[in-house]
Each structure stands twice: as C-alpha cells, then as structure tokens.
Image 1 (cartoon, rainbow, N blue to C red):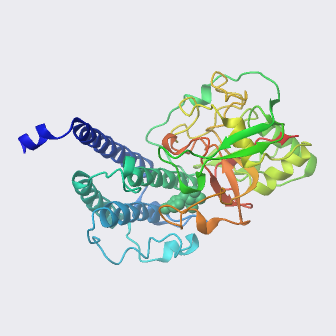
Image 2 (image 1 turned 60 degrees about the vertical axis):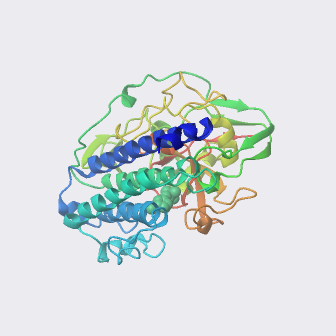
Image 3 (image 1 turned 135 degrees about the horizontal axis):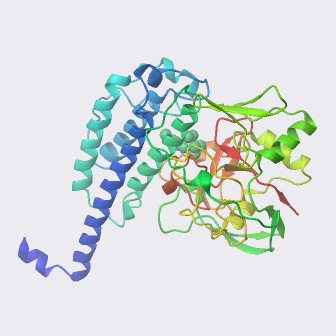
Length: 414
Ligand code: AVJ
Ligand code: FE
C-alpha cells in the first residue's frame, strides 16, 4: 500500500488529499445544518410538531421526516447503493405526491419516531461519505455536488419551517442575533440607475447552483432604475390608506389608526422603518403601480444585484426579523442598491420559466415541473434564508397570491 502510494503520481495524491478535505468539510456542514434544524424545533412540544397550523404549510414533523428521507434517497440509496431503513416511507415524503394540505393526515413518523430515523439515516450517510470516491467525471459527485444539494435542501426546509413558526403562539427561539435590527440606516437616492447593455445572467458551470440557474447566458437590457432599498412599511401604509387595500399577513389595526403585527405569539407596533414583508405578488404589483413604478423583471433584478455581498446581509434566520430599509449601506451592490441579498425576498414581474438551454439536473421535480406561467419568481433571500443558500443567480418561486413566504419588494422604472 505504502509503496503504491509513493509511486502514485503527485497529481493523484493531491486529488486524494483534496477529496479528503472536501469530505471533512461536507461532514462538518451536514452536522451544522442538522444542529440548526434541531435548534429551530427545540422549544416545541410534540403536539406543536404534529399540529397542522395552515392548509398551505406542512406540519413541522413532515419537514423533519422529509429532510431525512430526501437525504436517505440521495446520499444513502443513490450514492451508496444501499437499501432504505424503512421501505415504506418514500411515498409519504414525496413532496409532489403529497400536497401540503393533506400532510397532517398521512401515517408519517410522529415526534417520538422521527428523531431515531433522522439519526439512523445520518449514520449511514456518513458511512457512505467515507467510502465514496468523489469522481470528478460524475456530475453528481464532482466537487461534492449531491452533498451541496442536500445541504441546500435542509437549509431551504428550515425556511419553510420558519414560515410555520410565525404562526406558533409563544415561540421562544433558543438563540437570537439582534445585530441586524440595530444596523445603521444610510441615506441615498430613492432609485439607482442601471445602464443598458449586454449582461451575463445565471450561474456559470463551476460550483454548486440549481439547474434552474443554468446555463449562464447573455441578455440585452434597456437602461432602467431600481429602488435603492426595499419598500418600507411606512410607504406601504400610505398605499393601504390611499387604496383601502388588504394589509400584509400578520397585521391588524391597533384601534387608534395605526397597525400592529403578531408573529410567534408576540404583538408589536408595525415599525415604519422596516421593509414590508408577507405581501403577495398581487399586492406587490399593485403597490408598484400605485407608486407610478413597476416590479423589476428577474433579469433586471439580477443585474442590479451584481456585486452584492451575502456576508454583509441579514440572512441565516437567527435575527428573527428585518434590518431597517437602508441598512448595510457599506456593502451595496455595484449598482448602488442595498439589501439586494437578505431581509426580504423580492417579488419580480417574471414567470418562473427555463433559462435558454436549460437541462434538468439531477431531477426534474426540483424546477422543471414548475416552469410555466403559474409561478412568479422571487429573488435575493430573506432574513429567514440560510446564508449558504443564497447568491444573486438564485431563483425562488411561488404562487402570486401567497403571503406566508418572507416576501416584500422593491420597484423599478424605465
Ligand atoms: C424553491 C422554495 C419553491 O419549498 O417548494 C424544497 C424548495 N424543493 N424541497 C419548495 C424545495 C424541494 C422549493 N422552493
Ligand atoms: Fe423538499
């Protein structure tokens, strides 16, 4: 063995060392993702985990079983070629087969059964990770693609779980980061100008990205302007008063002409300085028109976001709310716009469609089955998005009427 190793070309040895380092970092990140998932649910009773709070959201217990089942499918069965721990679970946790509104009635693993299943799967995942050769010729394994996908999946379900946690009365987070709320607001123009021209859109071939971000391609854009910051509660209240519109989800009148919002069981006055959040596409679009502007296309949004820094942004869930609009002024995008990443997902005018040259990879049920004119694209991530998930090419989508997501907007014109 020793001799063979000494004789192996230096390149191969270096490759093996890099493979080891990659595996170690994957194992650490999988552990961190799981710690985070468990941190979110730690304050909850079994009853709260099992409970159906809303027909448009799964009970938390479904997300937990689904996270583990998806991990078993990809990291144990597909990569490791092993049999499932419990053969009967796949169908129950198939997000396409089981619409959210019926997930509470399925014979899924309950609070006392799900943790052993999560742990059993994870043990096998780590055994397979130890054995697998991260073959650079296999697109599923090159640069650990499938592991990145699994990390992103758990992170994304954490955000869905946070959508439901907004509805849980007296939810007390075990850890809170109050930094974003106290970020200073910066002054600047209401809108920033973006020059017309040819721009590179989408994710390049290297590094992890979802299939719907690829391939990168060039797009011609006319000049446009985009709001420097997300739309504030103050501006949204003006719009409501002027149009007698529906308030955002979780808002109520305070009886004295003002607004309060109730989330996680706490009622607080609506802070005029914060970005508006939990509005539908229909409401966002109506706001933009009322303001004499329009929603940006997703391509405009991506161009305006170039150069944004996800490490100086309100992301990663533990702030449990937004930073004021105009925060993070020391880390603007190249366009001068701030908070393109973090705080609130931003509705765009675009339908969720394929980039030219799209190929489904590694499974069509992630993106391809949702393409068409049914879903609208959101960009940029919210405070409730894990930092590792987001990049300027990342595309989220939902139905135009949905408000349970952490969505706000900024307007464009031109
Ligand atoms: C990208 C947020 C629309 O939750 O439906 C999770 C992410 N896909 N598991 C969703 C997803 C598969 C997806 N969104
Ligand atoms: Fe999923």
